[in-house]
Length: 379
Ligand code: 13P
Ligand code: SF4
Image (cartoon, rainbow, N blue to C red; front, side, top):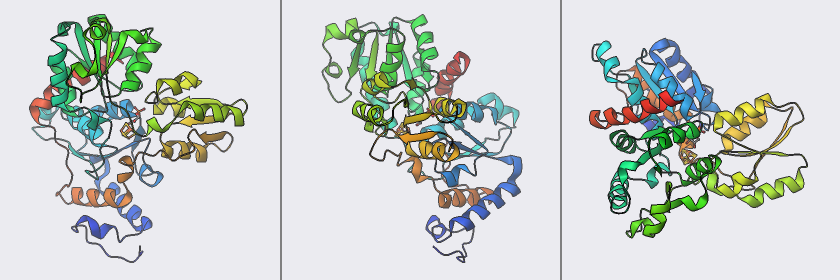
């Protein structure tokens, strides 16, 4: 990389790779200064440090959704996160009444790199969910099932929930959302993350034998006997986060053996076996809050994405912070967002030629909004 590279703001993306981080940061700051309040940059906690330094607001999925919903006054949101987050921002920042109040103007939502997806979200496709719903209807009464989708899902799945009396949840409000769902129906179909669903339902007292796992690749009732489905109050989609799947119960044992007094703090996307051995479980913001509130000298082993843990380690030298796994677990798709993509997308946005615009079609957005607004009312 050269600090003297000259790249015109109209250049295609590869030219931006020639710029140094210093030069990219200066150019990003310059766009931010010139655009002022017309631009909002949102960043998820898992983003790399260089990117998060340019965010106007950093948060977990729930906080970022709320923030997007409240930013209807700006002209553009650049989302340093993954695809489903940008879709959610587009839906919430462009609610029909707000677009009408702005004389038809939409908030432009940009994802700096379109390859920033989520492998968990990809584990549940809308056709698969629709097929599962139809198949379930041959065994149980689906009017007594509330579909709940983790926010880590495509807008089409949120719309499915909106249409079928269902709701969205995040890792910070899953319990409140399941309470809401169980007040309406005897059963819940939870997708795409089986672990968040299982961990939350168990915390609420649902026994494991009243849960089953639906394998979307098994045409025989998702791999379930009819009796098991009839008995189940929680039908868990067979999906998971490949990052959090890397944390194992034996990693907790090893930490406890090597670090006396260690507090094990994990994200609820970890398996039940890991969660069972942990001291504390919660969303990314919960994890940050626990460490921020702890007294100097506290020792932690943290089971969530690497960038968040490394940042905590840097920001809290008064505490001992260890990554729970001996192997690197980072979200490769979040990592796609780098300074080069951020600079490229910002300069094109400022020139009125936005790239990587995330626009959910109106019909999908309408029903997804129904499910998202139910969530925002619950928590
Ligand atoms: P939260 O920020 O909601 O805890 O979610 C973590 C995550 O995996 C985002 O994809
Ligand atoms: Fe998806 Fe897991 Fe990455 Fe979160 S950490 S965006 S759930 S792959």
